[in-house]
Length: 194
Image: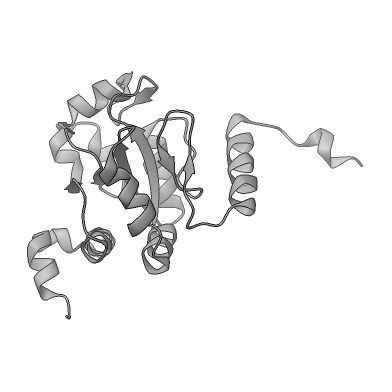
């Protein structure tokens, strides 16, 4: 029996398959410059831009969901890719524990928010008050409870602007370890061993 004829090709299958092939041929620490002028890590989430589905997909994999907001020509976005993500300990930790969706702060792609509203990336950035790049948004572990919350209440943490590599890794640990439930990020960093 020819199983290739019985396999159902879906858009998600094609997206993830293409991403896997691209990642196979590229070294993980090397970002790729995309057509929209943003650098992208080969392991970033390939998405249909439905935030609820992306968050639930991450949860099924035992990971947390984060959005990285960028802008073409942003020097600190580039530094995040070439300095922070270039460190094996940082990239490894994030890949193992997070799904990261890259969005363009002035982009026109249509995104479906947790509440079902569809809007451009630029409109979504305005809705969440994202004004700086890079900005990382971190969300709760499940999408359903987020629908009825105001946008600012949907996040468990935010990193607006560039963070030095050690603080950058600490932010991801802060979210993964759910330290935001008991302390501020500043207190979390102060408590880390030197």
